Length: 274
Ligand SMILES: [Zn+2]
Image 1: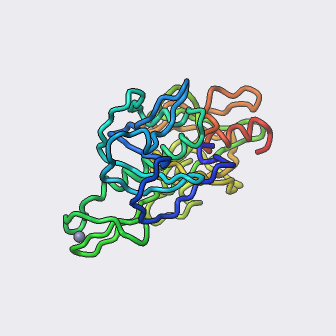
Image 2 (image 1 turned 90 degrees about the vertical axis):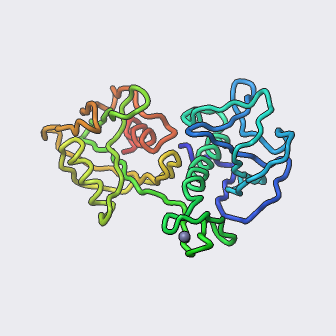
Image 3 (image 1 turned 135 degrees about the horizontal axis):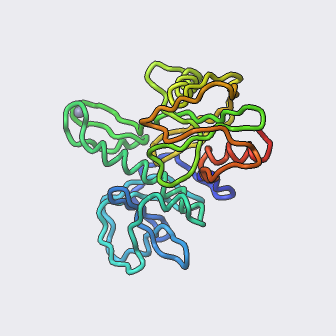
């Protein structure tokens, strides 16, 4: 999965660092794009030494191994091999560390850019020194990065798994039923509601599988398995789902890749682990 970068060490602990070392990574975003440096047939995150001019407006984000990673705003780009790419590219890079820090960096810089002004009084905010948050110097409002919990569930019936094509997928592939946790709802209630809403099925034997942070939507995916009787009629929610159906273990259609917990669950079913 995208977040599995062992033996590399990712450390999200916040420090109020200002000094950028030559080997430190600089993460820069423009709309939905990330600045990458071409390296053979793959990409790298640019390091401080790749920039010739001084760097201003940097924000410390996290570290990977012994390198610190900073977010930068509006750099002067003068390196011929620098290119902005849609952040979707990060899911398919060979270099797993680049994919992961580029993804989490985008989540944090989006949060930072969306909270430069106080939502309560409109004043310009500042970065808090002792933790990862912005603080309003006028009214004291503290804003932490928001993480939205979401569920994803592999529904099986004997040798079959329920797969669905979402209306908003970038690509032609099948995945699992997923959705955000609503206000006032327990995680278990979310799973039962989402399955009923999206495909009209009642489930049983709901079990927790594992979780995955998913920076692209600032969420954490909580993975589950469940069973459903395949004699029930599938009724799809047409605003969300293009098609859905039962597929046998030995004959699965193109589906989500292993970078996501969705692909991880489907592969586990395919291998007979679920
Ligand atoms: Zn304020």
